[in-house]
Figure 1 (cartoon, helix red, strand yellow):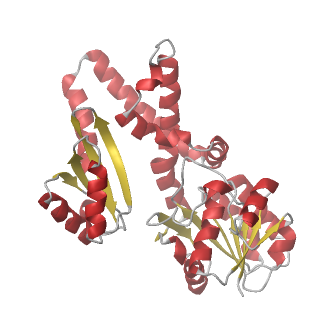
Figure 2: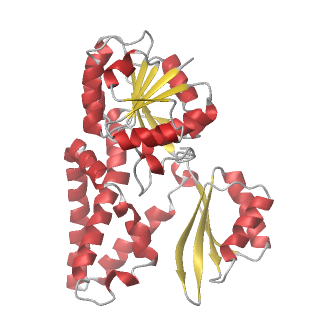
Amino acid sequence: MTRVLIKGLGLIGSSLALAIRAAHPAVYLVGCDVNAASLNYARQQTIVDEVSHDFSKSARSADVIILAGPVSVICADLRQLATLTLKLNVIVTDVGSTKRTVMAASRELGQRGVTFIGGHPMAGSHKSGVTAGRADLFENAFYFLVPGLAAADAVAQLQTLLAGTRVKWLTVTPRQHDRIVGQLSHVPHVVAAALVNQTHTALADSPLGLRLAAGGFKSMTRIASSDPTMWTAILLANGQLVTHQLQDYIDKLREIQTAISAGDAPAIKQFFTAAKVTRDHLGPEHLGSLPNFFDLFLNVPDRVGAIADVTKRLASAQLSLVNIHILEIREEVDGVLQVTFGNADTRDSAAELLRSAGYEIVRRN
């Protein structure tokens, strides 16, 4: 029987446990966490088969060890594991959102002959903690793997264990990972939080204030609801790179600020034109064959049952959705509905189906 130890039963750790349980009922899951309430919940809800307060003891008998805490804790765990006698052929992996720091911390473990595979599922939620875990959290999300010196069969073994996550695997170097994630995740979280904080201050004297926030503002700032403790740890771990990326962003803001102050219409238009061209060209048909999502954007009338009608038609045709997102709904104005699919054929079939039902397809990506 394979024995899997998950250290850290927050959103990611508990969701991994549920995904493993769904695909491999025979796997014996052990959960370890410093929070007694999290352990009690995980045991009561049978998220894991056993709970442990002693990481060192549980690690010695594990076939696979998944480190699912903050990056700083993951690094400390790796240093601790390097002092223990672990099972032969044990696989150690993590879910940390920065990889250069983690891979550096794993060197001593690797020197002892223990297989370490860096990992990072690009999925999450504004909710946190063990109670927010769900087996489908990672479905169709990208899951970065940083194998380092790990053998191909060990990587395959880990992927088989995590097959229930239904992720899209991407193998990268630590530097590639941190640069990509810094720009596409870390910087946007900082920007979203800054915009919310600035808006709160700017509208502090307004009776309506943030009560009117909707549409684009809410879509853009949704990620500002993420766990502050987690994001503090992430930015400290990837601080140098994110600092440079933020400076580039600040420089862009200053450029448009200067253009607005000067009344430079051509510069302002070019600012938005460049962004539109880049944004409209996201996707595999323009950027290559990287596994991606396939979107339809359609107008839906602002009336009761409109969205339900769309999803019912797709379900009746057995066209599986990956995600659905209301971009904007206002009174007496059509809203834009984004529906996401796992492959181009399903998206194209959905477009044909919905167009024949009278829906206007605004764009497909």
